[in-house]
Length: 408
Ligand code: FES
Ligand code: FES
Image (cartoon, rainbow, N blue to C red; front, top):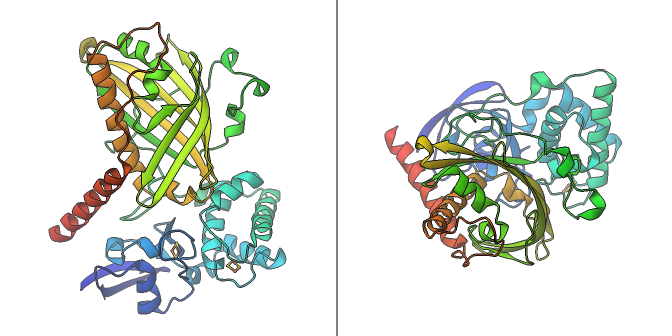
């Protein structure tokens, strides 16, 4: 047993807990806070959603010992919360609940959505709430209730800025502040807009335009270096076929052009296999060595879809002997796989995929594949062994967890 100190619904508490106990059981059994419901206990349904340091989190997949020092808010802690009061009334008015089992988690996520995204469209709300499942399928009423609260708040001229997440404690979503792979704040600003002249009319391409993308649900920053000049790396990045085959698990569905590519990305994580097929448009600016890749993909097996944008900037490094590549990936995932886009596991997997991409890129350039003319695909990269990737991520987590435990 380990004694942990935390704040639960504004009250400082201290309790002994077994390392294996998850936060939901801890809250229900130790403090009788049974408003936190357990549905799947696998981090899928969202019924157990509570706030940890102001950030919605699944209490069924969070160990209580990992929350030492954190501030927890369960549904019982929102009695005096104005936004929650409005949401409760709206859920009743709009018939946003039937059996009520999902409702505490729904309300926690809905409150976060109202505060963070005051101008959200119906689609945005559905994406933001896609990590909460209702077995009674009351989604229409739920979305209408959230829209109603947003409209009422807007009519009152209410600004949400004061309530937006500001800090993360020992446990949080990790989304509050974009950080680079090494944990530092992003040092360079990556251009947000494409040159207007290069944007395609919607009718010419199935790839969504910037306006259609909306705010990405998840944003990741990655940085890597290759020991070749910026001009050589820039030229290689212009060969979309070759670039695609540097990405583990990626193959091409059609011959790419200079500005359009249609990839298939196969990802296997444990029992889950996803075959994403899609298309992307690419715009590059040689004067700033920046590129933007905007696209969509869908996995018919799981009925999940994703759309998003990758922006990269190349920087001279080591006096021109090397190139530093900074990448920002913003994407929104909908459908059954959406639950994983909120997980910090995505950050770890993205980090490893970036490392594999950098390694493949380095070896291609070492082989002298830096030419500018051909757009053909190079020899296929090694397939992504996502199974071992997943387990190496988990293994790192386990090591980190026990390391932290023994230091205390
Ligand atoms: S009970 Fe936690 S996500 Fe389903
Ligand atoms: S209201 Fe019954 S599970 Fe959502």
